[in-house]
Picture 1 (spheres, rainbow, N blue to C red):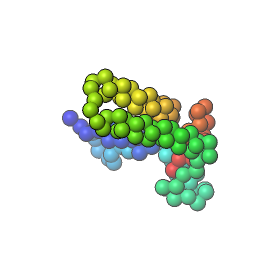
Picture 2 (cartoon, one colour; picture 1 turned 180 degrees about the horizontal axis):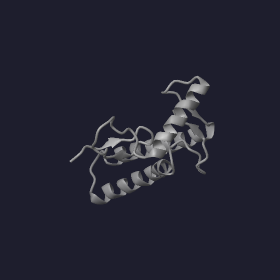
Picture 3 (cartoon, rainbow, N blue to C red; picture 1 turned 90 degrees about the horizontal axis):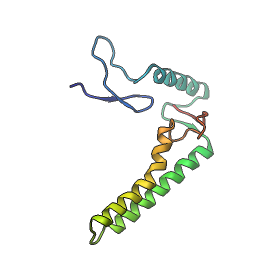
Amino acid sequence: MREEVRCAWCGRPFVPSPGPGRPRRYCRRSCRQRDFEARRRAAEHGLADHELIVTRAALSRLDDAAYVLACAVEDVDRDLAGEHDEVDVARALAWLLDAARPLAELSRRGGLLAGGDGAGAVTSL
């Protein structure tokens, strides 16, 4: 069985097809194109590969979602620190999942920092 690798653009796992040449870095041609465009935009702005332009609103949405998840993790840690039964564990897991779902939804909609409408709130590099 071939080992999965992650797309250099979107991070999705994929199994590269065997064959000659360089190994694939992207899961789809559109990811390869987006990465090319981002590198070109970064060069135009004089940014390094590890730098990113993000709107304040997108960063605020991400920060809020991460804060809610961090608070839920603290709550669950505290709730499960002592004696607990299956009902307590189920309740804690449900609370943690409820807190994590908005963050997962942001990720599914095309990126954690992308605008809710999919408009380019981010220049990814």
